[in-house]
Length: 470
Ligand code: SAH
Image 1 (cartoon, rainbow, N blue to C red):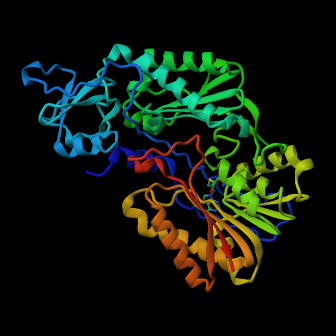
Image 2 (image 1 turned 30 degrees about the vertical axis):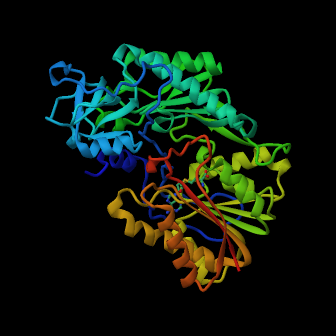
Image 3 (image 1 turned 60 degrees about the vertical axis):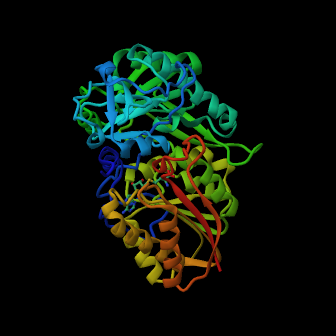
């Protein structure tokens, strides 16, 4: 059974390359627009299996006669997956085709009757159960469990001293923080949260989420982000995105690439249709890219300049390329916020289809010393992987042809369907076809505030390779 629910959600979060024209060689201004692309967003519905508050785990066999309505048996196959640490049970793995409660908390047993833990249930998703605890629990405990888990997620980031690097980071990352279907991002004094599962959308759970965030973080504003299609798939009522608490939706965030150095600033506007700021999952990769960057730099798929601004701290010339005019306009505003602390006197923002631009520039012999490739996820499904890898290869091949000897390539994929091995294989093939020898300086993932959990491969979705081209 493929992870349909995950795939469905991922489909919503990714998009292929739009086809746009471009004007090359444009001055440091924005050129014409034809379409605005939606940036990627990664939402995970994953969870761990630990609790600090629940009653001790019981491994006793349960008499079938004692099976309560909130108890579900799962197949041997599902039990093996749960034991290995993966928190999902697909609908096809439920024994006896039970009709699951909407937004419930159910006790999960394996075929033989052994207790496996508790899960939140969905009446609509193909991922019928998402484990929330390996202990026994009931519905009334859900709000306090959620609250405890949010506090633990905040403590985890504090223990890693993430707030010293940035005041913008992911506070809660769904299953990676044992809170399936809850995402909370901190943008300085504004919090943006999103609820993606039926159980997290329960009134008393939502109240617990907001209350805990207020008490722990004291934000000036809490905004709710809404993915309409996910809410439809989860059969959740339609709601409006917007301010839930406080009065603030816009702020300035800071990212500090090096300790003791002044941070870079980015605008964040939760009121804008697209989220603004920078991709929080790339924060540590921005800093890594800055460490190697030199000379003239090209940031392809630059969005609002997350990489471009960091490159501008180390490079003399920087060009940012994206298909979204509004993203480039925000990039220029971000440049102005940081102008005085940058090495590059300006950043040239170019609205273009990256594929067309790279093909033309590599054919005409244009050269750079540093190139960043951070496209949206091309692999929307596992089936689309071969096409996606061809897309990545085309971009990487062109970029490698355009790199001067000694140049740096920073190349990323944010698709969990593309494994690190496949991505590195694609890169090696691109280098071979470009007749370049490359050395891998760093093979990286997402920032630590987007935890990767052993046993849940979907949590390791972002790959970022920094390579030196001989
Ligand atoms: N590097 C950015 C994030 C990039 S997200 C950061 O760190 O903030 C992917 C971006 O690719 C989006 O901004 C989207 O507008 C852009 N995009 C998608 N398809 C494109 C195409 N074919 N050509 C140019 N830009 C494209």
